[in-house]
Length: 126
Image (cartoon, rainbow, N blue to C red):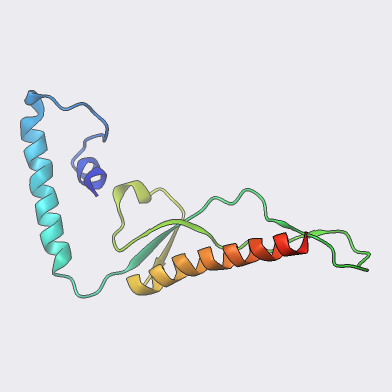
Protein backbone atom coordinates (compact mmCIF):
# COMPACT_ATOMS: atom_id res chain seq x y z
CA UNK A 1 0.00 0.00 0.00
CA UNK A 2 2.86 2.34 0.79
CA UNK A 3 4.26 1.70 -2.71
CA UNK A 4 0.91 2.83 -4.10
CA UNK A 5 0.97 6.03 -2.04
CA UNK A 6 4.50 6.80 -3.23
CA UNK A 7 3.71 6.10 -6.91
CA UNK A 8 0.47 8.13 -6.79
CA UNK A 9 2.53 11.11 -5.64
CA UNK A 10 5.13 10.81 -8.39
CA UNK A 11 7.73 8.98 -6.33
CA UNK A 12 9.60 5.76 -6.90
CA UNK A 13 9.60 3.10 -4.21
CA UNK A 14 13.07 2.03 -3.04
CA UNK A 15 14.43 5.54 -3.57
CA UNK A 16 16.68 6.71 -0.76
CA UNK A 17 15.04 9.50 1.21
CA UNK A 18 17.04 12.42 2.56
CA UNK A 19 16.18 15.41 4.75
CA UNK A 20 15.51 17.43 1.61
CA UNK A 21 12.62 15.04 0.84
CA UNK A 22 10.79 15.84 4.08
CA UNK A 23 8.02 17.79 2.26
CA UNK A 24 7.44 14.96 -0.18
CA UNK A 25 7.33 12.40 2.61
CA UNK A 26 4.73 14.50 4.47
CA UNK A 27 2.66 14.83 1.29
CA UNK A 28 2.74 11.05 0.80
CA UNK A 29 1.82 10.45 4.46
CA UNK A 30 -1.11 12.86 4.23
CA UNK A 31 -2.27 11.22 1.02
CA UNK A 32 -2.06 7.80 2.70
CA UNK A 33 -4.05 8.96 5.70
CA UNK A 34 -6.74 10.49 3.48
CA UNK A 35 -6.86 7.38 1.31
CA UNK A 36 -7.29 5.05 4.29
CA UNK A 37 -9.88 7.27 5.90
CA UNK A 38 -11.97 7.38 2.71
CA UNK A 39 -11.47 3.70 1.94
CA UNK A 40 -12.51 2.59 5.43
CA UNK A 41 -15.87 4.41 5.10
CA UNK A 42 -16.89 2.42 2.03
CA UNK A 43 -19.52 -0.27 2.48
CA UNK A 44 -18.87 -2.18 -0.73
CA UNK A 45 -15.59 -3.04 -2.42
CA UNK A 46 -14.86 -4.35 -5.88
CA UNK A 47 -12.36 -7.17 -6.21
CA UNK A 48 -9.26 -6.95 -8.40
CA UNK A 49 -7.40 -10.12 -9.35
CA UNK A 50 -4.07 -10.06 -11.19
CA UNK A 51 -3.96 -12.92 -13.68
CA UNK A 52 -0.83 -15.05 -13.65
CA UNK A 53 1.21 -15.22 -16.83
CA UNK A 54 0.77 -18.76 -18.10
CA UNK A 55 3.65 -20.04 -20.19
CA UNK A 56 2.29 -23.37 -21.39
CA UNK A 57 -0.69 -25.51 -20.50
CA UNK A 58 0.07 -28.82 -18.83
CA UNK A 59 0.18 -31.95 -21.01
CA UNK A 60 -2.32 -34.61 -20.03
CA UNK A 61 -0.89 -38.11 -19.96
CA UNK A 62 -2.75 -40.63 -22.16
CA UNK A 63 -4.99 -43.12 -20.37
CA UNK A 64 -4.17 -46.85 -20.44
CA UNK A 65 -5.18 -48.38 -23.75
CA UNK A 66 -5.59 -44.94 -25.32
CA UNK A 67 -3.81 -44.73 -28.64
CA UNK A 68 -4.21 -40.96 -29.00
CA UNK A 69 -1.28 -38.60 -28.60
CA UNK A 70 -1.11 -36.60 -25.36
CA UNK A 71 -2.90 -33.29 -25.70
CA UNK A 72 -2.61 -29.99 -23.93
CA UNK A 73 -5.05 -29.44 -21.09
CA UNK A 74 -7.20 -26.35 -21.16
CA UNK A 75 -5.31 -23.67 -19.25
CA UNK A 76 -6.78 -22.94 -15.84
CA UNK A 77 -7.10 -19.36 -14.75
CA UNK A 78 -4.52 -18.55 -12.09
CA UNK A 79 -3.88 -15.37 -10.17
CA UNK A 80 -0.86 -13.83 -8.46
CA UNK A 81 -2.67 -11.43 -6.13
CA UNK A 82 -6.01 -9.91 -5.20
CA UNK A 83 -7.07 -6.63 -3.68
CA UNK A 84 -10.16 -4.54 -2.88
CA UNK A 85 -8.48 -1.58 -4.57
CA UNK A 86 -6.78 -1.02 -7.91
CA UNK A 87 -3.27 -0.17 -6.80
CA UNK A 88 -0.89 1.71 -9.08
CA UNK A 89 1.43 -1.29 -9.64
CA UNK A 90 -1.56 -3.38 -10.81
CA UNK A 91 -2.81 -0.97 -13.49
CA UNK A 92 -0.62 -2.33 -16.29
CA UNK A 93 -1.32 -6.00 -15.49
CA UNK A 94 -3.93 -8.38 -16.87
CA UNK A 95 -6.82 -7.95 -14.42
CA UNK A 96 -10.09 -9.63 -13.66
CA UNK A 97 -12.41 -7.11 -11.99
CA UNK A 98 -15.26 -8.51 -9.93
CA UNK A 99 -18.24 -6.62 -8.51
CA UNK A 100 -17.60 -7.93 -5.01
CA UNK A 101 -14.34 -8.33 -3.10
CA UNK A 102 -15.59 -11.47 -1.33
CA UNK A 103 -16.16 -13.14 -4.70
CA UNK A 104 -12.64 -12.15 -5.77
CA UNK A 105 -11.19 -13.76 -2.63
CA UNK A 106 -13.20 -16.94 -3.28
CA UNK A 107 -12.04 -17.06 -6.91
CA UNK A 108 -8.39 -16.54 -5.92
CA UNK A 109 -8.31 -19.32 -3.34
CA UNK A 110 -10.56 -21.53 -5.47
CA UNK A 111 -8.04 -21.35 -8.31
CA UNK A 112 -5.28 -22.41 -5.90
CA UNK A 113 -7.36 -25.35 -4.69
CA UNK A 114 -8.13 -26.46 -8.27
CA UNK A 115 -4.47 -26.17 -9.25
CA UNK A 116 -3.38 -28.19 -6.22
CA UNK A 117 -6.01 -30.87 -6.92
CA UNK A 118 -4.96 -31.16 -10.57
CA UNK A 119 -1.32 -31.48 -9.55
CA UNK A 120 -2.18 -34.27 -7.10
CA UNK A 121 -4.18 -36.10 -9.79
CA UNK A 122 -1.25 -35.94 -12.21
CA UNK A 123 1.13 -37.20 -9.51
CA UNK A 124 -1.26 -40.06 -8.63
CA UNK A 125 -1.39 -41.14 -12.30
CA UNK A 126 2.40 -41.13 -12.59
